[in-house]
Length: 66
Ligand SMILES: [Zn+2]
Image (tube, rainbow, N blue to C red; front, side, top):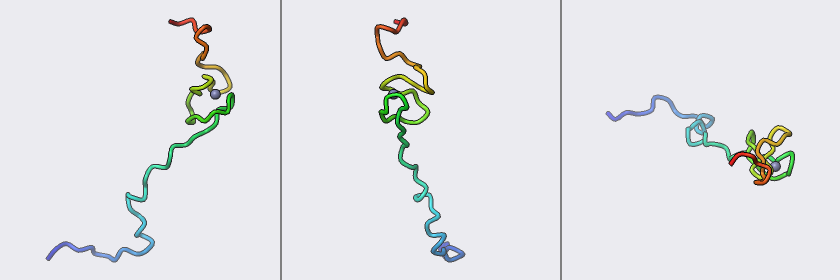
């Protein structure tokens, strides 16, 4: 006798599958400084600001490290 499911899968349980738990699309926020789209909790790649202050200097003349 082949294995069979013991209980009938109801219509409410039908959607309870791993195929329905896919990752949501990547969130995009806008930078508070330059309004360009950027992923959340990251330094803005356009202006280098994060948390209201400049973290990365975008001008190569102002950066003191080589
Ligand atoms: Zn920015």
